[in-house]
Length: 135
Image (cartoon, rainbow, N blue to C red; front, side, top):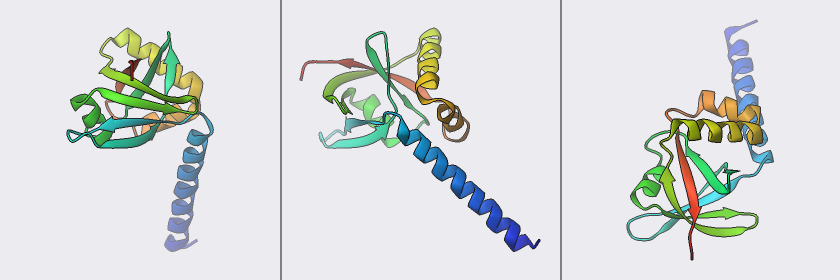
């Protein structure tokens, strides 16, 4: 087998793994979070969401993500789900016990894909609590 053929097989396998991971991640609920910049312009980002103890949570997978930075600078956001849009106030969860429970909720809801995303995409993830507020 030639080097070129081995490289093609490896690239094909990586592509199929990426495609499979993406499709598996889209099978369970994917919400959108609308964050706002300093001018008030809204930006929507697709993401996973879990509900625990009457609150919704999302995660910033890596530092420096545009939506995460906007959320930290302007914590008034909107969570968009199939059931409608909910204005929320966001805050970073700092309690390790709470973060562990929330991570378990993500693992239950999203299964092996949550673990896989953690391996390949998340680095120093931050958990975000979304508390509903009046519109």
